[in-house]
Structure formats: structure tokens, C-alpha cells
Image 1: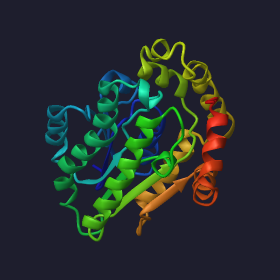
Image 2: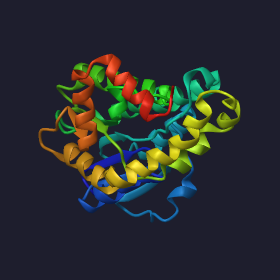
Image 3: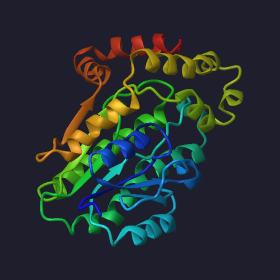
Length: 277
């Protein structure tokens, strides 16, 4: 049995799935979780890899997951589960806004709080808690206000927890830029009947091309999920882990530009780029 285990949320695809393979290949025991266990069907349970059903918006599911792994020497938690709710703020329903925060913010912190006692069993300095945020936790772009806000909240939670427990359990904040993924497929599932709701408004043409442009950009300029996951693992596995990791040149330079470009020019460029008059 491995002497160190990591639990990863949101392992059905993308960065989460890549993290499973990388952590396992480097000798960590891995607890791969997903809301739907069928999405993990191509992973084989073994002495060093466990599959657990975990819905971060369901308190019973979280408690059951804690019970299922409490006998393992849990050293790290990677909060990766989340999704992006696209749409102009004035078109979002209260339910869509709440669900974005229930998953990306509240569920993330509930999971952290529930698993923290298991990580505290490690010797001081050996535990790790990782928050996967986004470059959009530091700046905002049009048409993704709910997602922007949720990732700003994740940044605040990570920085606060680091001040509270970071001297004993390092808290690592991850800020990726564009990642190659099935962004368009995931996005269109989340937005439901949003295109119908914005018919006849200035947003109609903007959202019609948004998903295509974002996925095309990520495909040309984004980092692969595997490369991003490797950087996350390196930070988690370091003897002296960094408190903040910016991943991707686009994440770095966007944050630099956001600090130095005048606000009126910044907003003009983003409106023009996203087809908003």
C-alpha cells in the first residue's frame, strides 16, 4: 500500500483525469472521484487506486466518501471539480447562478472542511490542499460573469485558508489559463436554453460564436490537460510547495496586462473581442 494518498475531485475528464494518471505513476495512492462513477469505468480499482462516487453539491455523498477513505493515510486533497456557466448576467436565472456557486465554491469548501481532519493526521508540513482556480479568478471577461465570480471566490477561499492553516498544511492555489478540452460540449450542456432566452438581443450573435472561438483558441494556444496536471503535481509534491502557481503564458500575461492597461481600454478590447457593442 502506498504511504501517501491523494484524493482528487472531478476526475471524469480533463485535468482531473490527467492528475489521476500522473499521481499514480509517481507512486502516490490515488482516490479518483466523480459525480457519476460510470465516467471512471476505464480505471481499474487496485491497492493503489480507488474509485469513489463524490458529488460536491451533496453533503451525504461527501460524508460517505470520507467514511470510505478514512482508513487510508490521506496526505493531499486536490479540489478540481467544477464547470463554467456561460451567459450574460442579466440573462442568467437565479437557479443557474446558485448552481455555479454550489459546485465551484460552496461544494469545494465543504469537501475541504470534511477531509481536513484526515489530512491533519499527517505530520506537520506533510499535508497538502490544492485549489484549482483560474486566471478568471484574478480578472473578468464578458459572458462568463457567474464563472468569473465563482473563481474569484475560490481565490479568496484559498488565500484565507492559507493564512489560517498554511503554516502547518500548505494550501496551493492554481491559476491556469486556457486548457485544451471539450470546452464547447461542456459549455453547451451548462447553458441549457440560454440561446433561446437571448434571441433578439445584442447577445445572440455573441454567444453563438463564443463557444467556437474559445475552443479554437484553446486548441491553438492552450496547454494540454496532461501538461497542466504535471505542473499541479510538481507543486503538490514539492518539499516546500508554492502558495500560488500561475500556469500558462496566457494566464501570466493576461494578469500583467490587467494590472497595467487602463480600465477603459481593457474593457473596450474585451467588448470588441467578444462581439458586444
